[in-house]
Image (cartoon, rainbow, N blue to C red; front, side):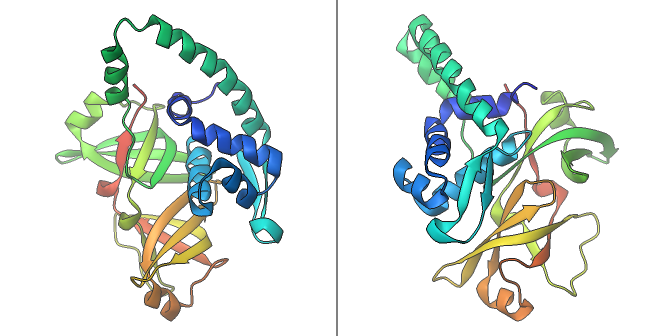
Length: 254
């Protein structure tokens, strides 16, 4: 199985992520790997979630709790990615030598932008239908999970979306709403069952939640700390996350 094009580009642009994978392989701990890579514990978790979401299979297998902040090791796919990166480094050196002008590299950098969206979910277009001025794009995320995105006809044509096209769904954490036990999902919204893996509260009264989906991917969501307390929601609990299809942005490899 070939590595998805978007993940390959992401790795090529973010070598520190590969360094983190290498440290995880050596240290067997998220906390120690983060320290060795020179990043915070939270940044390490965010990086792992992003890589796992973009890959067809999780690159890191982890267990929370315990000494050192929980154990972690590379999956078979993660080990394969490390080997692949060595080949990518060789190709990168060839590209740098072939660049005719320094401006060529600046142009490439502009063409491969990073995004502020915390959630990046890889999926395959499983359905396309027109809804007035927009197209409703169904995305199969794997593991039986599916979400919908609402985009313009022009966007569908520009991205050249057809059934089977691999895309990445981008979703800001603030657009993901956690539902209480008695809340009814809004009609037409995406609603996914998840397990709350971690709750990080800040001084503003807001909390950031890491939600594990049933297919191994993760979502980042925001919620008021007081509301979580009222609902009795904490790490380890089951929950539901909803977001409107119009909030889902789609991207394809270039």
